Length: 84
Image (cartoon, rainbow, N blue to C red):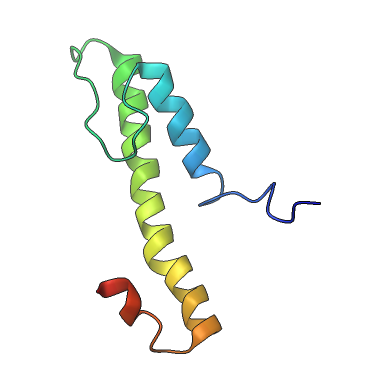
């Protein structure tokens, strides 16, 4: 039995970002540049805006939620290992 099989990162944001990047033909690497298209390509522009919004949410998740869990688990000094 695998305990962590159905857990998601950032409320499913990671999987959504990967799917959207695949959809517009971008690199699957998070936070990498997105392909440019004309401003008339509204669907592409809308997907790019959503990708950037979700990636910003992942950063917030990493800074706030993960740091809070580490602090609870290891004490108030645990965040020092993240800054070095």
